Image (cartoon, rainbow over all chains, first blue to last red; front, side, top):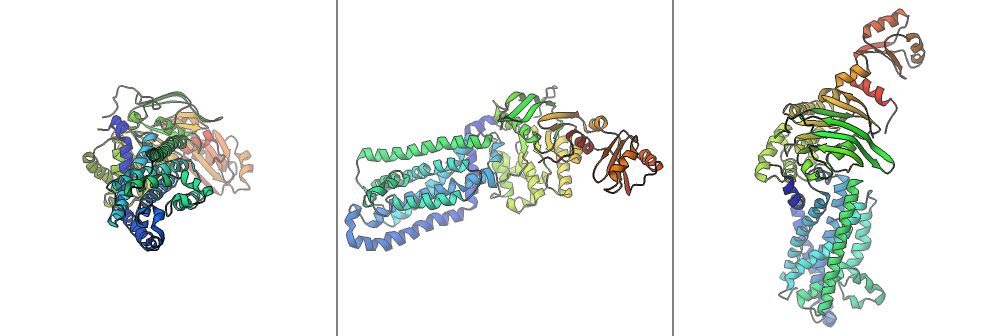
Length: 266
Length: 313
């Protein structure tokens, strides 16, 4: 009955299955979060703030309402925030706090499958969360284009581009001295504010724009805007944005694999 | 299902070494374990027991030496070896966010087992671990002994041929230990090969057919508990207490009684074939200990003789 060859083939999926079951055990919190958070943001920023912004000068946002301008950025940043949580604390939990990684590590699974399984489960969560977020923005009338739903996979890659390098970092931490809180406060939050989320990146002075350029959130948001309301930019730029996300995720994935191998053998 | 009884050892280790930089955690261990045997690795903290266990499962690569587990090299065939192993680690690593029963089902999936097999199997194992009424409880509501039993149940989900137990009862109260020993004994009866590390000598005496005493990565002695006691200790031990001031001076007056005398700060131990006779002799010499005790020699005496009494941390 026991099959090492099935474990070799489907091990990553088995690990993902385990993670998804854990997520399922607090599904109501996740659901409330993925519906509640967009609704709150859309009402506060997209409707409250938007009334003020749209009265002044809608021109700054390429001729669309502030709500339509903001919505793709919110979808992307929600994915980044989720990834920032899922690739930090659970990693520490796996190696140190409750050592949950060491169970599967003693099974036929290989280390690379634990990494891939973790990523797979988070990707599934990101897909579901981004789809829900996008659906709600559509209900608010904030995604006029027919291609808007394609921003869901972009949001997932945006989350992975930010999350996978973080995962590699998290696997290298042996002692929790509040590093994750620092990451949230001094990396995630500034990116959220300076990645062209609430205003176009061009409205920032030149010496601050680089924050956007290195931020996966800005690249994801730019593509999201094109998909969601037809924000126009040259094709090569769109490809560059997507290549940046894929590249960052790819480098993060390689680093995470290495960090896990090192951690398990040490 | 069991390893063929063709006399092939299920574990065969030759000159096994594991180094971390200059430090050799395991320094040339050679041993064999036969199918169905219950084999113990005894040793103080840091002796290399857990590292040896990790090498058997192929989760830690050896530095040199040869190792075959069920005929395979675990460094090359880790998944194939681990598919037939059950591992009970020193520290529990159950998923506390899942229910008791789900911990078993989820773990079984790692062995490529289908849910249709795992659901009844999980119930059967919960019964074996005396946890049936906790099936739907969260793991963090369990006591230490229950968690340990659940970890053992989890290690059995794949019907392993070999169970690796790393200090299975450390930190448990006597009741919980005895329940656990009973369960392990049943497994042994059903033909599962048990490999366990422990520093509880009574546990080794209860469970092990054969054991090696390991210290600083090397084998100090090998044999059955009874053989080791015969070889490294006497049949009986007389323990005398003269009060901490008098113990050392009393040793001089006791010289010649029994086979060996050991003076400890709190008592004097006389290793002798006949403890009562040794006590009589001491009394004849005019010595009047505050308390005296004659007991059978135990594995603990062997262990302390071989690995010393100084503290290892």
